[in-house]
Length: 614
Image 1 (cartoon, rainbow, N blue to C red):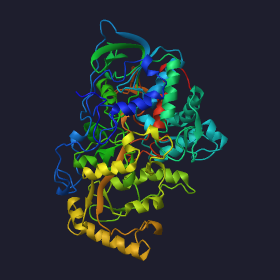
Image 2 (image 1 turned 60 degrees about the vertical axis):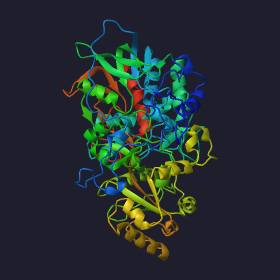
Image 3 (image 1 turned 120 degrees about the horizontal axis):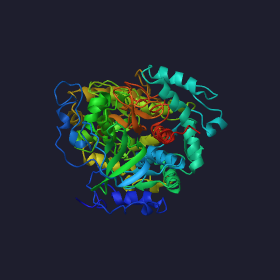
Image 4 (image 1 turned 90 degrees about the vertical axis):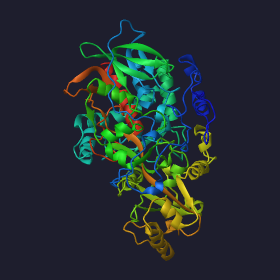
């Protein structure tokens, strides 16, 4: 296998990116784990943030049609080779070994946002804690999150007298509101726990050393020193701070050490795990109190998506979680007869670029340039040429609505016939970007962005990612609309006719669509070359997962708690009920995805140690 520091086409090396992140921890990892590059890592393995979408896999020609490969025209099936994982089988538990390699009170699986909090909270409460992590450093996908959405109850929000659905903050009222939004498909006790725990978790993290500030929109907080006008790797400051706090409290972090199986005794209690130290040497770890699973969901496992979240399997064109999310911990839970909660629920942003349809990689870094370009208010149509609406992310007076737009537009783009949408623009596209003025994670990255060093080098100028997409023919660049129409798989005249109608509106200066574009966004598609791209949802969270009760204990298919086993989100499910495309009430659940992970870890660490919330 090639060394994990080798240079890779169209991206900085994994060593470069992880090295930048590691430097910020002041050498803490070196004292607690093997050197980052001590082990060879196969390209495309967990932690490969820089792999682009251009490696070749055998997929049907995109011009063959917009329906599925099966011929029923329902949707274009994903090719499993584009995914890091494709296995839905349960991972059975192992018996108790004759002797254990390591002993502790609590084992935490995963050192992302949830795992860092679970480990830190456990150690704070006096538990001897070991945290294993498959990647080479802390933070997981949480570090790339843009905002920590909290709907009320934190000290910062109390200062602003802010809470949803109304102030003063009331967890019961929030639960009632959320249950109505979730069509009463969720566990109200669990939703109440999320409502009351979100603000407490944020305040506890502040007490641990995270320097929060209230966001420009009061539904979220962000680290005080993070980028002010953009949503790029903001949470890295928070995950670094929680890692440092965990180290101070004595957490034994073991990196490049993926968990491989749970250990269950004859009485059915989960008493530890097996893990592969350095991806090779298997060790057993005894957890006298509990095992806490906080290793994320299964955004990057095709078989699990097909089985448990079919709407995401159909409607999402990509995932933006390139680090992990392959579902092993979920499968370990299934192996000890855990039940599943949150069937067919997920969370997605708009503008998922369909790299996989051209042989590219399913999971992409969110700020790859092409993703941001795809999320602008271009002419957007379905495969029949019908216009699709756009939802503005400019904050204006209603910040909550601007945030909702990021998820609601995903539903618009995921649900047309074929479960794909198409954006069309011409060679003058760069002239229009400033006027679109989209905010949050739709904003394009430029080299002068503050704290640009947090971004992988290749993506520090958005043009690079767009060039990658053109080279891979994911963003199709053609001299005529007729060529573009044929190569995107449209029926003859459909795309050309849609463009003619759009151009007529542009010339008149008034959009005649049911959801009209503002006048300043009406730009003719008239100057070659012409560009087109297939898009869908951009999956960022699986909301189906292991069933838990309101004390974060995993529940079996018999309805009984599995003793010794806890799970935080997104290994756990149920945070927004069943059958949700985007997991709202606001951007994923009562807490945004990274907030939910933070809170889940905090709750797990609290309850696994027989404590109560602060």
